[in-house]
Image (cartoon, helix red, strand yellow):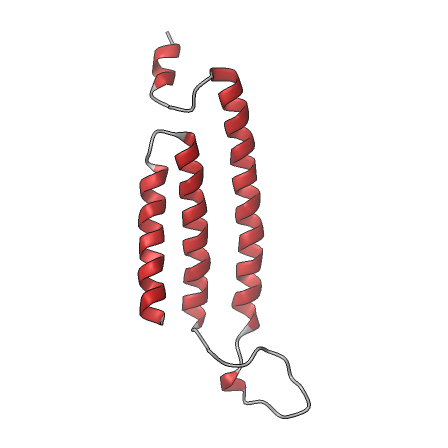
Length: 114
């Protein structure tokens, strides 16, 4: 399971970097989304994948090695909110940019500088 998730993280990072290097601003935003998701998965992988019980302590005593760690889950939840805020901010910038220039291709801006 961890090998498959590690491969998925690598694919997401590769696709994210590729999309960021494209000319279109929409593809740039998609690349940011890919990188954000890959980083979230990487945090989960670094903490260790435990297919055990959630961190609820009930009446019966639970073994600590079989419980999931709540700290990486809290960090990823925070990272999701921050990533969503960054994506919304870049979408607002893209909307204003398109409104002013009429294009989202960065190569066409070289022609408008003259």
